Amino acid sequence: MKAIVVKKAGGPKVLKYKEVPIPKTKPGWSLVKVKGFGINHSEIFTREGLSPSVKFPRILGIECVGVVDKSTSPHLEEGQKVISIMGEMGRAFDGSYAEYVLLPNDQIYPVETTLDWADLAAVPETFFTAYGSLKTLRLQETDRVLIRSGASGVGIAALRLIKAKYPEIKVTASVRSMKKEKMLLNAGYDHVVKDKHGKLKTKVQFTKVLELVGPATLKDTFKHVVPQGIVCNTGELGGKWYMDDFDPIADIHGGAYLTSFESGSVNSAKLNKMLNYIRKYHVEVSPTKVFTLDKVREAHEYLESNHNIGKVVVVNK
Image (cartoon, rainbow, N blue to C red; front, top):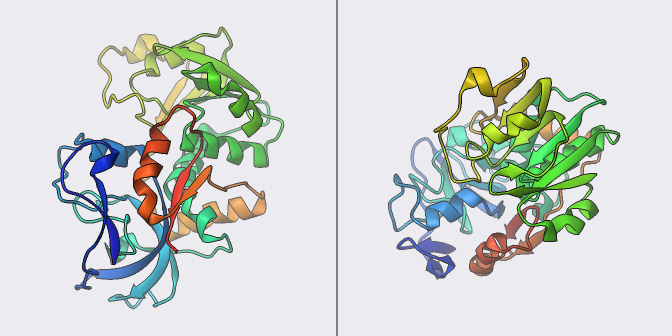
C-alpha cells in the first residue's frame, strides 16, 4: 500500500510518500480501508518532534473514515462504513496517513451517513470536538458567543453547528491577524476581534466562550465573560498545556463557569447522534481544501500557512 512515513522529526519535507506492507490483522484488531482523513495541528506537533511519547519511524494520523476491510470482531462487518478517532492511532502505532490502517476493534465506530467521503473526512475529530464542546456551553438563543481562534478547523465547525440551529445567535471570532477578517465574515461570523499577544482588543462581554487557544489565553478570556457566563476550554493551540498564573477564585469571577471537553470520550452512539444533528439542521461540513495522499506534504504546508481557515482533508483515490 501507499503511505506517508516519517523517519525523523522535522518540517513538511520529512513526510515521505512511499510503498509499505499492508498491515496484517491480529486478535482484537481489524483492518480498515482508509477513504479519507483530516489533517490536525496535533499531527504537525508530532511531526516536529513535540510529542515525547512518539517514536519514529511512524505513520501519522489520529483520525480516519473508511470501510472495514478485514475484521476480527463479530460486531464489525466487512464493507461497513466506519469512523476512528483518537486513542493512540498515529502515536503509539501507525495511523491513517495510508491506504489501510490496522486499528483496535474498540476504536472502530460504525456510522450511518450519506455524506460523501470528502465531507465525512472533515467531520470526525473536528466536528465531534466542536459538537461536544457546544453541548457543555448550554447554548440559548439569546447568547453572545466568542470562539477564540475562530479561523481554526474546530472554530469554523463550531460556527456552522451554532448557526445551523440558532441563526439568531451572534458569534464573534478572535484572530491574530485581521487580514483574515473578510474571510471569517464570509464564513458566517458576525464580528471579528483581534487577539494581540494573547489579549483580546475589545471591551465586549460574552455569555459563552469556546476557548481553543487554551491555557495560554484562558486568564484573559475570563476578563470578557459576563457574570454566570460559561467558558469551555477545549483546544491547546497556544502551545501551553498547563496554567502558570491562574487564580480560580479571582479569575473565574461573578459566578462564571469553567468547563471542558475531551474528544477521547467517543463511541458509535455519540458519533451517530452528531451525524443526526448535522443531517437534521443541514449543517455545512465541507472542508476548506481537499488533497490526495501523495500531496500530504502540501496539505501540512497549507494548514500552517497564514491564509488557511477551516478544515483540510485528504481523500484516497
